[in-house]
Image (tube, rainbow, N blue to C red; front, side):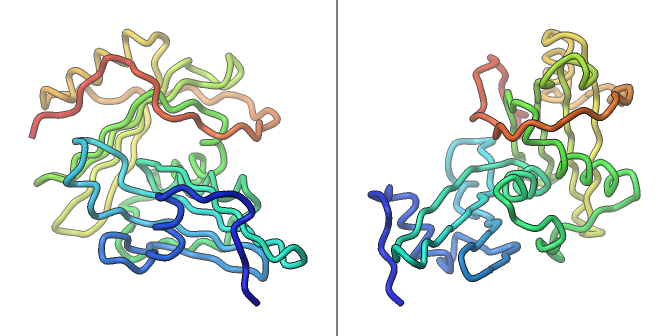
Length: 225
């Protein structure tokens, strides 16, 4: 059966549709049904683009078999668990996305935090992120909480990859004000961040289906290489 796009695809979407096996787009995870396909891709060419840009792409391809049309939605993310959260919000079964061998959690704390990010990331607004794929690969993400019931107003997620072991850690810090979060970010940029203070647990409330927006400008810069 031949399908046609239900709306005019952008160049980026067309490239994703017909070039998912292109050398620069590495498929990390995928799941398919008769009417939906879900992908998490690593854009390996992003390292040559704007410094610090997110390198993961979450893609949802939905098909209308009766109308013989398809639609493509795509969003970029700095963390694998955030990409999973977006796909799950688009009705991808939570247990259908297998963690790739290149994304191994180093400890139980990382696994527990990634489970929470996978569940709750769509409720938070991403303010900024920086992906450093240099000698010591790491990713820093700044988030704004959806409301007071979610705990501290601002969060920092910090993922670090150990080249020797091939595993990564993920840690979270909570901040009352944007200035406090910025101060930590500046210290990280300078190579001497203080330990992240884990946010106090907040009672679980009804989750919103709103997807995270693109990073808003916070006047922050990435880490010097």
